[in-house]
Length: 121
Image (tube, rainbow, N blue to C red; front, side):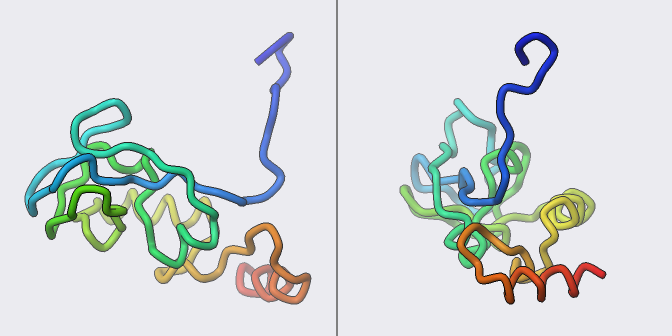
């Protein structure tokens, strides 16, 4: 903040920072946060992040892996045993259904955006 004013804000969900395995990760391992030893963040287009169900780097800390992830692989929501309340909160904030399909991202047609708005009503 500068002079008590926000210095920037997004206008649309265009990209996401997804979690990527720094090394081969085994089932049962607990992920750490940014700057740790298990994952790093990589920018991905929003549409790709949603289609892969990629785990945002901000949600990685403390997540326990349910299955192995190879070094360089994107960690997905389904790879992790995530607290159901945390995942529900994330989905609500981003307007996502369980499949990550209801969010309009930058570049969607007006018809797609209208359909998303109807789904939220």
